Image 1 (spheres, rainbow, N blue to C red):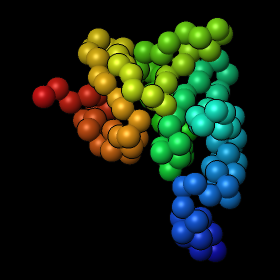
Image 2: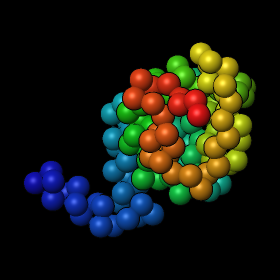
Image 3: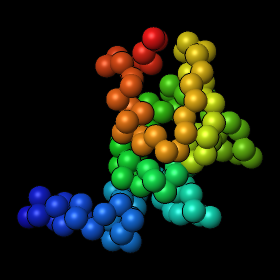
Image 4: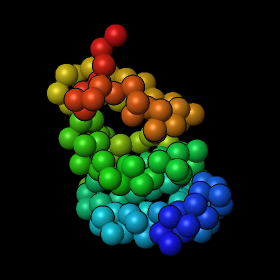
Length: 126
């Protein structure tokens, strides 16, 4: 039954309101508030926030699952009381441990972006 529901949601596509509500429920189970504001997907947990492009809607569950890894690995920008990782627009980001920077453009899907990372969770240096 769960598999049938998942397949039904996948057929609806990433822009479906039903899919977004399912992602919102899944995020809420992880303590993450999910909303769309001014065409940007906003994920907030405590004083941490991740902004995604609408093109990355399908990546919302992965971002929620890897929340701690994102904030442990990438330096955020302090905006008010929140530390923000903004992947909704082109930007240069910096890895905490190595100090290496990378450019991420919203047209690069989060899943593709995660594939360029080494299995150790560290960026590949090429």
